[in-house]
Amino acid sequence: METGLLTSLGLFAAGVVLLLLGGDLLVKGAVALAERRGVRPLTIGLTLVAFGTSAPELALNVAAASGGDTALSFGNMMGSSLTNMGLILGLSTLVRPMKVQSSLLRRELPALLGAVVVLLVLALLPPMLEAERPGLSRVDGLVLIAGFGLFLAMLLRSARKPAQVGAELAEDLREVAKREPVVSWQLASAMVAGGLALLGFGGKLGEMGAVGAARALGMSSQLIGLTVVSLATTMPELFTSLIAMRRGQADMALGNIIGSNIFNLLLILGTVAVMATVPLPAGGMSILLVLLGFTLLLFPLSVSFDWTITRPEGLLLLVLYLAFMAWQVWMGVSAAT
Image (cartoon, rainbow, N blue to C red; front, top):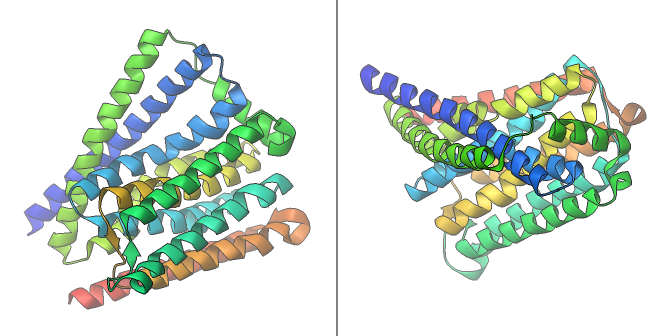
């Protein structure tokens, strides 16, 4: 058993490394291609840079869905979203209090709340129409992807009007988009292709390792996805947000966290549901309600203390996240014994 567990953990670690390398390579190549086609830096920052931190999770969950392990995907998406709002936002705010721009409160936060509410409704809707277990059908997946399309259209529209994005955030995104050196279109194309290949291979390795570890430990795939996998795949968001906070770019840190959650819940979970129906795992509804609670909590935290998320508020988010995860692990271990 120990040998099998170590092998599974090794496969998972190798998969995560390939996912992170592939996501980074894909974004750099895509940004270079976009620049050569004359795409505005702000548009690149709002779309490609945001997509880059979610690319590893997309690849891993597509691999999990193709193998029929939708519980791993569900746990990973819920865990990643909670990790973003509890762990990453909490730690980022402890580094430096986070000033919130009104544009984020008007656009991204309501979009995230809408995504969570729609996901809750869709997860409960099938039993009302059919005698089936609650969850997400392929039609629900298409609805989520359509919602992501609307969000993306909103981002692109904002890119044409930098004032709607916020002056500081717009400048931060321009700097990120311009940071990479100019490369030829041949090299950029090769980077995109290489990044996609690494994502595909890393996603499969990560999925195999996570499933193997879950079986060796006697834990459910959902719990593995909620904890270990979500922590590993949110490393890009964590590093991006902490670096942004140290540089005083709080708007980028918060925008990265909220945007990543919208990508997770609409694009990635929608894609998984289209590939294979996603039954709601045991305890899945309580996790969704906790996710809704964290999302609602961001609204008063954002407008209190002169539109600043303070260190005590960040500590509150961190404590709530750690308490919930500890409870999930305790419940999962108790069920396995």
